[in-house]
Image (cartoon, rainbow, N blue to C red; front, side):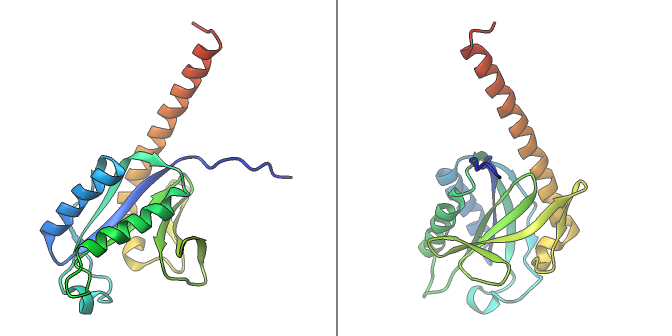
Length: 190
């Protein structure tokens, strides 16, 4: 029999893309005001693996990936996606998005993105939001799955997230060490 326990904290990440480079930078700053300091920003890259968003947003699309310093509980990802949807809404022009924000998280085992669209491999979380298992961590690397978006399957992008995972794992080790020290002091240790 399994014994349910609370999930460990995870590392909040996001992808942002827009035809306006300056808007991406401005929204990264806005998100840091909502979710806390950003601790990593990727190099700028083109969002060019699909032209799905071209009609709505224009072309070319400039992209950045970010991660946030503060770890979150996995269930916070639903409210995070709802908040980022709200930020996207603030920048609509004539009913069309000028920026796309896709939050997700990294855990020791996986990278999960969020979406409002159902599909066979997506798990309903709550409030109209689904979790998309995008990458799995195995033998020291993130591995794509049959349904992984082409841009996330790219070795360079997976390498970005492997570095973010290293930072996250260090944060976990430090938190565990602080917890053990706290327990020792609470029990009267010196």
